[in-house]
Image (tube, rainbow, N blue to C red):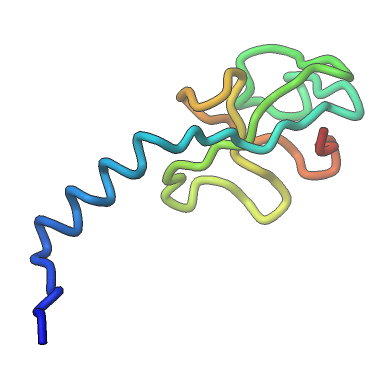
Length: 91
């Protein structure tokens, strides 16, 4: 019987090779209302209804509350910002 066991480094290399072939698109959101900086003081500016933002899929280290979602202004970019869940509409 043939031994098909792979070492850890072989598995990691295989994962990395396969991962490069996969393009990941994060969830896209449209804001369903204005979000003024006065409501969310951590935002760098006022955000307007119908602006498009993207779900952040990296580590947030517990920085976001249960009422918010980590998002980015550009897909697959950093930094992330917390947006109120009630302002997000999946596109």
